[in-house]
Length: 189
Image 1 (cartoon, one colour):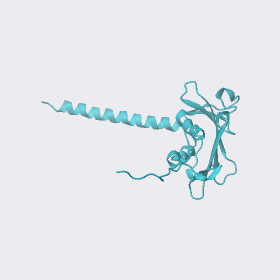
Image 2: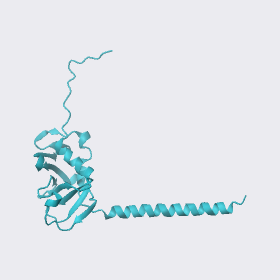
Image 3: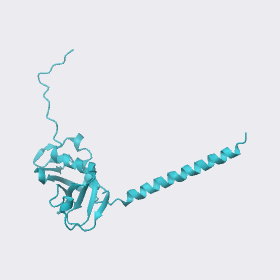
């Protein structure tokens, strides 16, 4: 049996596989780099977070304590539930939008941004002016939300999952679980 044709085919297969891998890796990376960064902060720059849902008449605010733990602003002695809070500072530190859909905002009503459905306000260490992000309606497909930074004209779309996490913080705040009383409970064999 002649191995030469088999080795040539195997070599071509390896080269083809390498070329496909290289193309997929760098085309995905280029696509990812085209996604616009709406804002970029380091986690330790964020010292306050407020989420308002004006249409639902809900609002919740959090602040970073001197001990580097997050608390409810209206109840400064109450720390947020760490398990639910987890990556929230990372989440709000610098998301990427799916894409920009308009360079000038003009009439914001078609996007649900006048008034916005949700307003996220980030208090930034050593800055007097907070960063205010406005969230509007869902896109017609229902998988994105319209987003705009207050004071800037561009309108973007962001994944629904990102926006839903923030909305849930206002709709169901991460209060710590009530302390469970262990009085009266006895170990049973």
